[in-house]
Length: 278
Length: 322
Image (tube, rainbow over all chains, first blue to last red; front, side, top):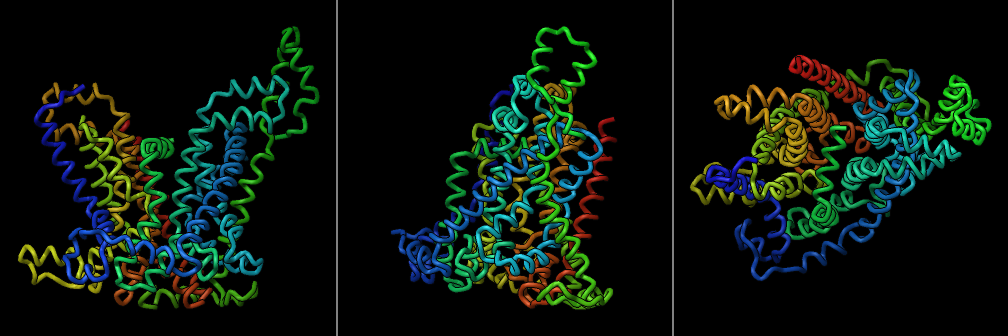
């Protein structure tokens, strides 16, 4: 181990300063959200309000379109969790078979998934929108979940396949020799062993879906099932330049992710790095 | 391939294996059949991408050559008329080059900053876990929300102009997002701020695979920090670089939320990219044929650039490993 000397200390102080500058937008976000509308005009944009004014959060919570931030939070949660459950079941099953049945067919199918990561989904969105509108799926949770299963499958299968390939076959072979069916072997032996990959998939895809703005705007815009980013978007349109309200809404919208990040940041960063290397 | 052969009688196979008296050939083949994962496991996943990605992508690519109105399935073949239209239009035509240039600038800056942060935070700093978390945080947050924070920062009565006035540079004060050049630079800054944590984490993971012994051996040999970086660290980061560069290229080419949140594509279309144009032409103006043409151009640009770059970076990895 290298020693901690004055050189390391000065480097540490320098990096802390860099990090503080990097985080200035967060300071501004909080400071502005806590200002009263009058403060915003009379004080410097970077000053911290004393005393802080929490009333903006009440306005932000209720005044936004589509039933307010409470409904938006619910919508985001239903769509994110619903999609993750389907992605994890479909993706792990598929990746398990692809990894355990090597050969031409498996290579072709795997390639289809990898190509799906690179080719942007925007090309498929227009026909999907027309098709979903015809089927009455536009503006519904079910429609969003189906849509995101399509968008998320390539990455999910890619992450799972890499993981299964590095997994020894001993346990599943023992289970099969004990007479367990293929599905039972998968569910009670293989799936629990995939936990690290499931964690990476849940974190990575969960963040994508939770933060998604483009597809939510197209498929849910104007409906009663809008997700957080779409509600924030219309809120900003409504309160142009009333930054104290906009920022209060932004804080409420990103709070769930920030709380999750603070609790699970170590696992999150490790799982993310591991998944990417996989 | 044929799962119909799988284990007509599992219990017999099990018993046979236990007493070990069976002929090895037969046993091995039945064991292999027994261990096979049925192909139907892939059906839900494969069906999802075929029905939800490939089929609509092919449909979208085809409709790009028609006068489709999005009302139904019917459309008339119009050849390359949509492409001629979108490429001659100033908003959409400019978007092609802007998308590519913005993505290239973004990839270069975000990877240089990411490597610098990774190398800096690899040192035995006491606060390194906290610092890594702080730099990574923006990546996890809503891109749209992030863009709004920066819209305020760059607003006329915002903190950037207040700072300029405070340090006596009041002559530079302006509405940053109303200037075409500063607006696109602002998009770049926001993208870098948001994704720097991602490249940092990928490079930190890459650095972990470089052994400390190699690092120390170079130091003992009297190599300076710069020499060590150039001859030891940087070449060994090649695999991480392939991942980080490809990922950030895909993010950069597809940037949508940040642009909508920061400038809405303005001023005068100067921050429109292919991703924002696909949305605007199709879902705001209802031009389904032209929107499909733009989406096809977008898909080709992204696929060709990322697959090409990935191939180049893979070759570089192999060359450096030799």
